Length: 334
Ligand SMILES: [Zn+2]
Image (cartoon, rainbow, N blue to C red; front, side, top):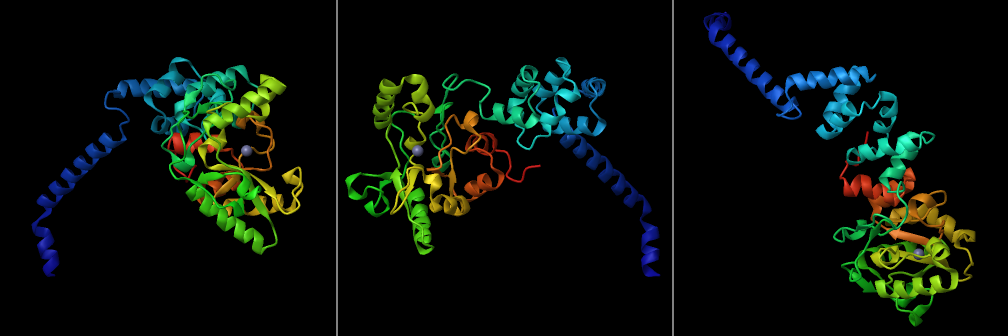
């Protein structure tokens, strides 16, 4: 009774409050949802109309307006990119907005490729020939640093925690000095010990190689096999994964096989390497992406989360790098 009486007394201030909050909320909503303050309502309607004429559906247009940069939206409209020529690319798991125009250009030349192939190739720069348009690698990324036929390291680069490791883990014992990032090495020691406890022997054959060492190696290969052949199995100086300090080659012990793939240790690595932060860097079938022949013996450290992701999804480190590291896309992808 008392409450009823009280309510009846204040209907007008209450209504005013509701009205003010509604207007306020609407203004905030409009401010947040508006993609760019410079883009006028008129222009937005114009874009919506043009995209629907290009066969994009209403919900797709809304999604594109939220996700694409203004430049890319304008590109779709001005170049009249039809839905069928773009939507599957856009919906690919590893679509990177910064590469949108490259995808469209690449698709126009390779219409027989699937959208996955187009996105994968553009993401990993496999749409360009090796050793052309190369870029300096971001050398501050530690375990995520990349070196391949598109990204190079400076001649003075080394991993920040490069360390000489115990000959116990080296195939050649104390006769050959082996170095690796300390973080990668400590994980390798765990892997090594676990492998031994299960009856497997895995030792490191070759780990860090300096720019100068790689330079000598590569030049020797070139003088015996020529540039074309040497490029298929050896990196040019600055472009070698071994210079990162996070990569190494392994052999099985004690009865070392010529081809690591023929050993039971290889199978063990396939099952377990990622649990310690390592992955097979040059897998079978990805030669055009990685730039190297399949190497069953070459492993790379990038931490447990990254290595497990690569192990589970089978994407290359090239694509992982572009999508997650270079362009910071979230791990919980669509
Ligand atoms: Zn190697």
